[in-house]
Image (cartoon, rainbow over all chains, first blue to last red):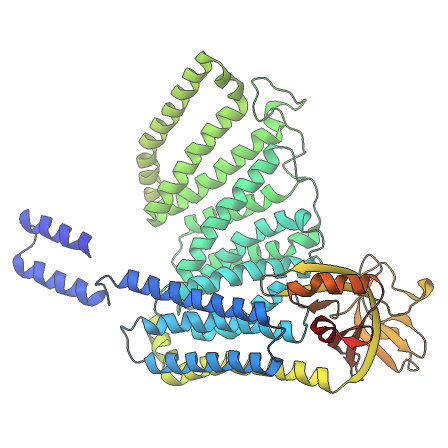
Amino acid sequence: MAGIEKKLSAWLEQGLISNTQYDAISQYEKAAVPGNNGGWWLYSLLILGTSIIGLGIISLIAANWALIPDMLKLACAFTVLGLLAVGIFMHYPRVNSHWFDVLISGFIVLCLATIGLIGQIYHLSAAWYQALLLWAAISLPLVLFARKLFAPFFWTTLFLYAFAWAGVSFAASGMSETYRQLPALFMFMPLLAASCYSFVRFIGVANNFSSSFFFWFQVSGLIALVVIDIMRSGGEMREYELAWYIPGYMAAAVLTLIILTRPDYRLLNKSLLIAVILLFLLYYHPYILFDGNTRYHYIGTEAVGSSSFWTADDIRAPILTIFILFLYATHAGNSGHHRTFNLITFLIGLRFVILYFQAMGGLAATGVGLIMSGLMIIGIAWFWYKSRGRLRRWSEELHE
Amino acid sequence: MRRHLLKRGLHNRWTLLLALILPLGVLAAQAWFAQQQREHGTAVKLPIDQFDARHLLVGHYLTYKIDYGISDDADCPASDIEAAVCLSPNARVFPWDERPASCSQYIRGNCNSEGDFITQLERFYIPEQYVQRLQQRVENQQGSLLISLDGAGNAAIRDLLIDDQPWKALVKQ
């Protein structure tokens, strides 16, 4: 709010708006953002307090559960849940009340604790992700009522994490070889988050969910790209079992279908996004583009492997990373997502710098090499800064 | 416009009430079914060994191997299949769809790729402060599991026994 007032004052001074317009906009902004008089920190403190109380209850039960009769433990859990439910119901008509969302957050956290409590009392040995999926299913209708971001963000975070593990575990008949199966999880997560984001946008009933899914799509997508780049650049990850990757391929198919049917995407955006998906899948496949042979050590001036420059995994991997990022940046620029565009183009520049050190890293050990490395970084930064605007304009004009 | 209509249609006091009743109902039903399973089956006692104490976010649990009294030639094949361990008249593992009619008491589960029979009974929650004492007893082959078994092969844990006494009796000493 302070930001808009500063801007309004500046516009008023410049004569861009009249006093009447200043007052009208000011009033509108105050009314449009409920509880903006420092409300965000009050809400944060309330959420923090509720979470700490929830954790305290869980710790208390966990520490003393053997001494408390089973029925008493269950009765306590259901009584607190019932009281919270009454509180949520009572606060529903108060549109500007922070307590409505705080109570929803407390309720869903306690639902999760109650699932754990029932599992503990009856010695149920379901996997943790099954418990989380049960929680996600029963709490979703309530989370759809949340007016603030916390509850949807909390829900999407746990749901994505549990669904990704459950998917790979189901396809692989268990997660007994977790470390070998991790790449399949890394591949599945961004595709799942993007599918959920597209689906939520498609049905159009939950804005807070779409922003949370989009956040996790970007975070998990970057992590997945960094992980596979490091692995391929090291000539690693040669193990591949189709069953582990089936959830990822299914999510890719669903995502492709949603992208193809989106009326607000032009042919260019659809082509760019589908190309990104296909290249991403190709990146995680160990045989089609990669053969496990590398050319350089991570730090070294000379080629050490027997591979030629263009067939080496540690050359192909960064090229593929940069190409995927470039296609996505073009889509972001073309769609008017300037922040995403800036972030992705910055990452492209960063990957170029890392590629330089991969191939020429040993030079940094000498004085001349350090000077050259510094010049290279400045050069790449300058090139990125200068090219970014051109690339954005080019991507925006592609559809015209 | 469509979004607003959907939101207005779905967001009212009655749907909120349903959204609140759903988790409460499901959790209550889960607890009720677990309680029924525990109370209303036939009590069966099975020896356990291979004790392991694990830490979990909420509370603690023990993992162990249940001794069904199966000889090596009647145990699981090393493949992932749905199976049943027949307890009576003879202890033997059968693929689930090949279980003979003469098998009157059985537990439903799975064989894993290592040739072990796995059910949902291999975990027992216990507070951390009692682990040391119980671990010693189970390593000395003094532990057994009291389960409740229904006619469809579904089993639920009733208690962990040490020398045929509930474990709580031991820790109170």
